[in-house]
Image (cartoon, rainbow, N blue to C red; front, side):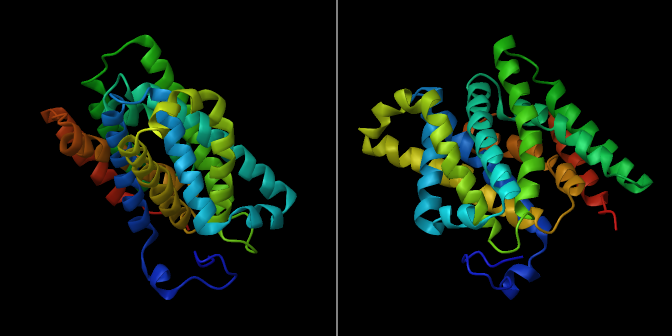
Length: 293
């Protein structure tokens, strides 16, 4: 793995000593911490505008921090296509995600999001222990979902579209993380985010214009972008570069659990008894899982 300073040197010893699972836990926390703040922004900015602020502010951060166009130009042709595809997925996935959480609880959207990764985890289970781990996590996610299936059909359509795109994200981001040893995976991620900023502009720029004239709202939007699309995706790349894709897919089960916890802390969405049991089952399944050799 390359160092995150963009130079072609071995990774820092500190990063090598940190287990990849720890990066995923960090990603899981920020994956819904940022969107929970975005829900609070919906009172000031339309949904599409919040999605635009998230992607574009993250793209600006990557541009200043990493100058990722250099990695894009240096990458092989097939890697460039993966970067472009990941950028398109980033843009449309986040648009669908915000459309969904504008009407549905974070826990419900997170549980629906888990359905695609279940298939990826199942494909790589290869042992009775991992099948049991998958069964526990699916049962936990079901309990997290089952008690809050209330909302408009359109909101669920956005949530399921987001789930499909999130599955594509796992496949493409895992490929980008391991695609080209000559460049940093963080730089390739940054290139994808810059492309996503261009792709989402026709969908959300008009709704984001009022926020550009309001310093407080603009700062809040930038904070959402950093906490939603910089920190968690960087952690994802650091985890994916060392974890099998099926293992990462199973760990996605942590997202509904962390969404419930973040929903309690930030949004006051109090979980029921069954949701608490679901969180426990997810944690047990993740603890039981072992990556295939």
